[in-house]
Image 1 (spheres, rainbow, N blue to C red):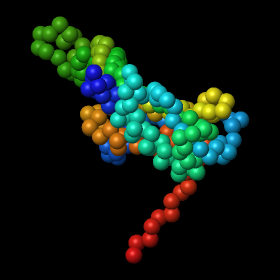
Image 2: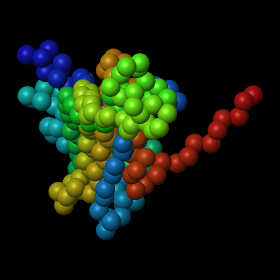
Image 3: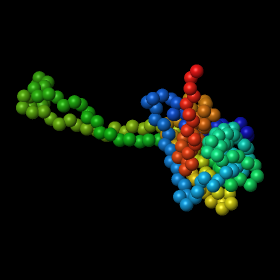
Image 4: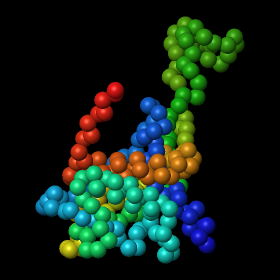
Length: 211
């Protein structure tokens, strides 16, 4: 049972490694929304919801552990520390990996337009030779593409008010096997991408000077 659950959970949030696949790779889409009336600088502590949305059937998944570690790193970089008792913020996650199908219809010419003067000897359309060309005939061509789409949600809740105050959503419509094979790196990049839109920015690290 646990093996089946792990097979379901492991791919859920691994789409973000598209960042590292090369200069021509298309990265995931990142969206965020938050309560404009909330002063995020007042929050100094956080904890994690229990159970997490990524923990299925009562089992704590490896993906959840990666998500918690990456989120803790991002929040502590912003001056919000992890506590196990009475946190001001609660963090929750949810993720999915869905099989998608894209259907596109395009019009393509059935044959190129013959130039003026082109014809077959004794052909039916030889009477047009040297006078004019016909327009091309078109047909509809349907292209069907199957792909995997991954979505990660990070929810941050004001624990006292039990109110969602920030939501980050990362979506990747081109999840590859290479991404599925490196879960931790993918999770780290997904979480970092989401927190790039957090209302409180992380301090910019000064570049180290080479000796």
